[in-house]
Every structure is written in C-alpha cells, then in structure tokens.
Image 1 (tube, rainbow, N blue to C red):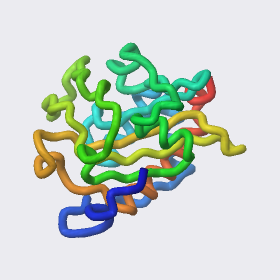
Image 2: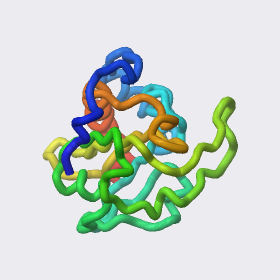
Image 3: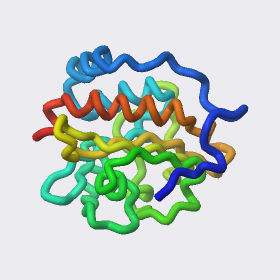
Image 4: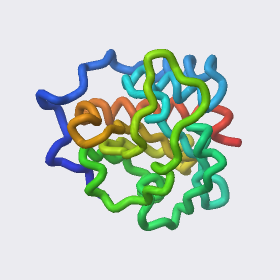
Length: 189
C-alpha cells in the first residue's frame, strides 16, 4: 500500500511545524508514562490529535492486539496475514505509511465502528469514528523484529472536517516515536 502522494507533504493545509522529537527525551517520557495508554496520550499531545486518534498494537503469536485505545483491546485482534488491515500491512512490510485520503484505501473498518468511551478529556468532544487520514509505523526491536504498530489518525465528518493533512515530516516524527516505543517493557511482554 503506497502513500497517498496526491495530498501528502507540506502544503497550505499541512500541520503546523512541531518541535523536532528528541528520541532520548521521548524514551524518557514513555518510561515515566509507564503504560500504553499514557504513552499514547503523550503521542496525542505531540501530534495534536485526540486521544482516540492514536492506536498502539502489540504483535503476539501472529496477531496484532490493541494496547490502546482501551475500547479496542477487547474488540478483537488483527491477523498479520490480513490483506485488508493497514496495521497488518505495516507489520509485514516493516515500512511507514501515510494516507491523507484514507477512505479511498481498502481497509478493515470494523474497529472504526467502536465508539471511544471512558472519561471525557477536557476540551475533547467525541468525534465520528471515520478515519480520513492515517499514519502507520512499525515498532521494531534492535534486531528488526516486529514488536507492534503505532498509528496516528485524523477523524471527522468528511475529509474537510478531518483536519490538516499529515506531512512527510509528521511521518518521520512518527517513525522516531516508534523507535522510542520499542524500548518500552509493555511492547516486549
């Protein structure tokens, strides 16, 4: 699955430039956070997305299991052999991916039907579950083995309301975040 090059990259609708991630500092923040949910909350702040727009999956026995959001942790698993799941494709190819028009990408949408729950975070309204823009990165150990996948998305009512396009810089930052996540104990469990 190739990146949606028609709308990726920097342009007038691109996200505002965030300070560059420092991997050592990020690893320290993840260590202090301690749990998958808290790490994903850190990522949501960094990428300026809602907490339900960050997903973290761990590979166990050929299946990707959601560590966050919590609502998806009991909803099922994704076999890495799946031909329709982007997370599975990311795990198999070990490549980062960017889609700024994700609804045009053939993908398993079953997990989009599960509404986020839990306590409402101040300033956050629950948004529609449709994912319009997505970045996906493999979480690899030092030897290059897949530990899991991290994904950042933009959800909305339609493409225009889903927010700005992800940029190639955003994708590189996600790749760095995935490297930092690989040091977390919960990814190796």
